[in-house]
Length: 372
Ligand SMILES: CC(C)(COP(=O)(O)OP(=O)(O)OC[C@H]1O[C@@H](n2cnc3c(N)ncnc32)[C@H](O)[C@@H]1OP(=O)(O)O)[C@@H](O)C(=O)NCCC(=O)NCCS
Image (cartoon, rainbow, N blue to C red; front, side, top):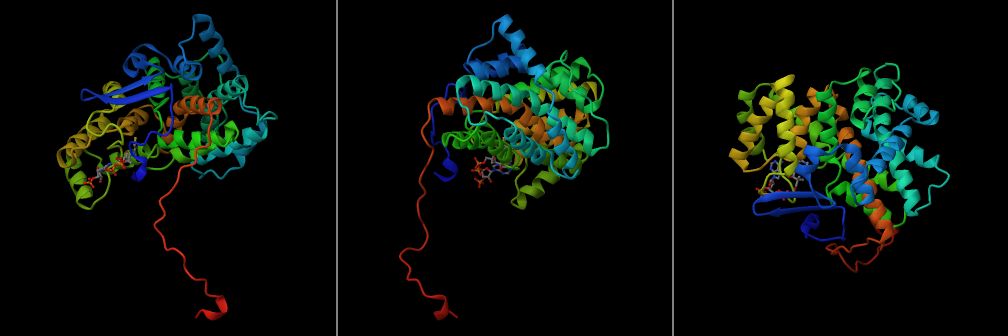
């Protein structure tokens, strides 16, 4: 029961994760993640998660257009980003900006299917802009406004770096967004669904999810992985580093998973291939250290890498600063969060579990004046 392991908390038709015949399975709305990784785009996956089916050609074009049109931020949000202390963690900035966006939505409490889809598209479109703008502001650079002619991934890299990314960079980030888009009842999605079950507004649900994602046992792990890669610094030091950490009873970030305990996380398979491709084309260092750590952790603890492990070397080779890693996860995951909030609204019952009480009982109250 501890950690609600294996407890089924709700029904969903958004995502299936399983271990079948010694293989990790991940499907979005019935489509295998490897097939989506090979053939799809983040925009198409976002549509699939929100609407339940793949789009027709015309649906896809108008969905992409709507996303692109909604990228720009209201001036009040840009003002907020300018006023937040530059040392604020970019995930704290993101959740604060989402809350502010909610305060500007006159229809914040509307929860019809159409209104929820509208809010979802706006949030999916604006997440990358919030992240890129804050990074430019905190580093004293001019804002690069979103372009409607670029894809979701291309446009984010363009706004972040101030120049159009290469095709490899844009495709790599697009694939990363697909792989992070959805993963059933992970902690942040569950947080969003709990909030939705009280009929809280969409922004409140996404704030709950964003705050939960930052924890180092969840999405925060990728930033910690990068810290570890920097600390290890060379592949030959990986084995002694891992052995020492494990002997001290410490956890190695980017390893272990509640569901994929003994099988490889299917997202890790894709991310490792992607990390290797970028390593061959750019800097091989982080990939080489990662592989050496993977070997050592398996040797000493029998644990496999999770989605956050190879994400780190992918992001480093895309020129993304370490403290934006969790935000990249959030930019991908927002579509999954919104799909779950909508599913919860549409078949709702308050999520209110019980706790087993283990504290003292029936104690006699002693007035303060009689206590020492
Ligand atoms: C993801 C995670 C929170 C899952 O936790 P969980 O399902 O509660 O797993 P448990 O805590 O029951 O761990 C089972 C065993 O594996 C060990 N273990 C799990 N993850 C470990 C890690 N990353 N490093 C070292 N040991 C780990 C535990 O110590 C425990 O060992 P024991 O049986 O010898 O005591 C956990 O694996 C973890 O902390 N990983 C590191 C953080 C991370 O990468 N998070 C991103 C997840 S996508």
